[in-house]
Image (cartoon, rainbow, N blue to C red; front, side, top):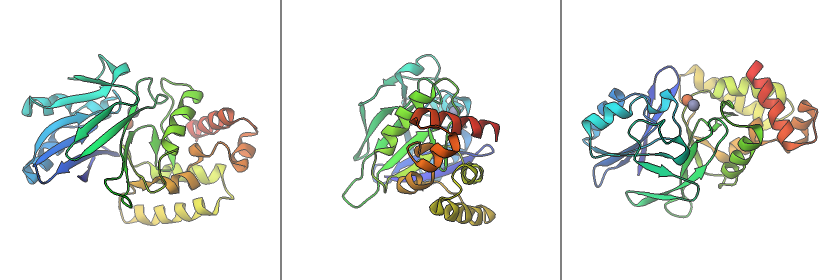
Length: 257
Ligand code: ZN
Ligand code: FE
């Protein structure tokens, strides 16, 4: 399974999962249909499924156009998104497993950004290889999604599930927000040397217009303030000794940043 990154709109990424043996593909969160169709015809591949993480327009905007061209494809999304995802046929919940090519994705229910958000995780194909996490707008490189329909407690539970995955997991989040996330992160975790180094590295990458996605989960654990509510440095910034309150206050500061 190859993962192909398609940049669309101002800062979204669509991910195409491609099986070159069978010439089939799955698309994750198609914001638009045209760029996906263009990539599929380059690959000469048939689209067999859409994996949606949540119902926002910049994640499902391409569903209808893709269904028109591939009427047989299956549209997957979270069970709580029933009625909100165009063409949805499969209603997923925590613990479900779905097959693509020779791989199986595990479904995590990760409410917080929306009340219905799910993530798709493909464990490593063989030992030593990375797993692949498609987490939509829940975990970002250096940040996390805004809380539109969920509480800080729900988001902490959701991020706790994702944080438990192996360090070498590749994080395929849906937006190129990394630089602005890190610009904020250094203001709340200034003494974190790993974070300072990452901020410099990402600045250099973005100067060259290089993508910063996928990121590596182990790097997120060391540098992402929204995975570090237990850390004394972040608790000091938040003036709290409680994990959820620390997370909530840091999230609030980011909303105002
Ligand atoms: Zn969203
Ligand atoms: Fe989004």
